[in-house]
Image (cartoon, rainbow, N blue to C red; front, side):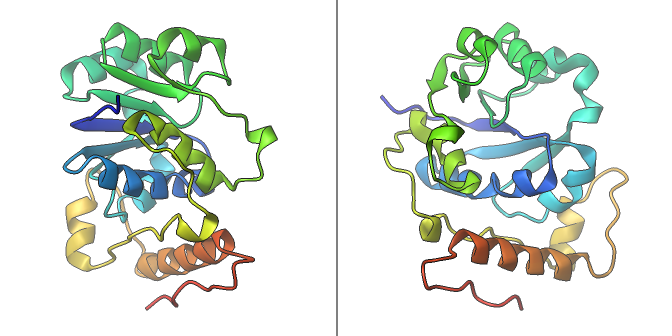
Length: 206
C-alpha cells in the first residue's frame, strides 16, 4: 500500500550537479503526495542554489547539524527520510529517532538494508537510465510504478524574483547579481541534456 508523508527530508550531500538532478524527483513527489513539505539536506555550498527551487520548501546544510543528527530529527516533525545517497550516520539517527518512513536503496549498503523499512532495489550499473530518472526509484513506496522517460522528467521550477530570493535566503547566504541568470542557463542546459535524442528542446531561459 502506498505511503503518505507530511514532511520529507531528502538527503543529497555530494556534487551540486547530482543535487540538481534530484530535484525533478522532489517535484514528482509533490504530485504523488499533495501538501507534503520537502526539506533538502545538502552541503552548505549548494544550499544557495537549491533555495531557488519552488519544489523545495526548506534547505538544511549538513554542516549545521552533523554533530547531532539524532536531536535534529527527534525535535523535527519529519516523518520520512529519503537517502538519495548512502549516509550511515543519518540513517542510523533516523532509525534511533523512530522516523516512520526511511527510504533507501537496499542494494547499495548493508546498513541501509538494516536501518530502512521502505526499501527500494536498483542498480545503476544495470540500467541505461539517466541519473535524474534513477532518482525516481525512491518514489516507489509512494505508488510510483514506472520511471518516466528522459523527456518526461520535467523541468525544475526555479523562481528567480527578488522577493522569492528574500523568502528563500536565511543565515549568511549571499547572492551575486547574476546568480538568477546563471541558474536559469544551467536549468536549460540540464533539461536539454535530459531530453537529448528525443528531438525536443527545452524552452529558452527568459
